[in-house]
Image (tube, rainbow, N blue to C red):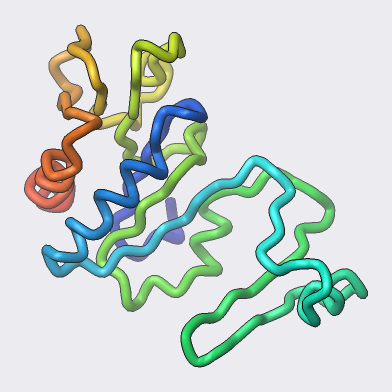
Length: 174
């Protein structure tokens, strides 16, 4: 990723595996360790962050793009992508101010090339991703898996273990 100014680490899994649930537990642990964490989440649907009836929604629907919503607490920029194309992570990295971050976590973009932790629950009957993705550096599961020695094995239900891997292995190797 030529536009990554800081370390990026992805979490790749099929829908329903628990990526967001894990990240909501992992991020506070990493922040407690002093890391400034950013996140990019790939959505697969036509999502709305502003609501019908709100001025920003009406102005965007009238044709304004981008639209910036700003208050004393947060900022959001909504940009229509035309023509509709599948976003590339590296293009999104260009748009994100990384100067105040130590680590950027990525949810999704599993087909792109950057370091990832695969999340896998055998009970969901989905295939493993690592055999077809050489960028997977670890696998977090809720069951014992037979995987190659080069893959670090983590427990998906132990966010502290995953944070330790990120802090003491992933970030130290960079």
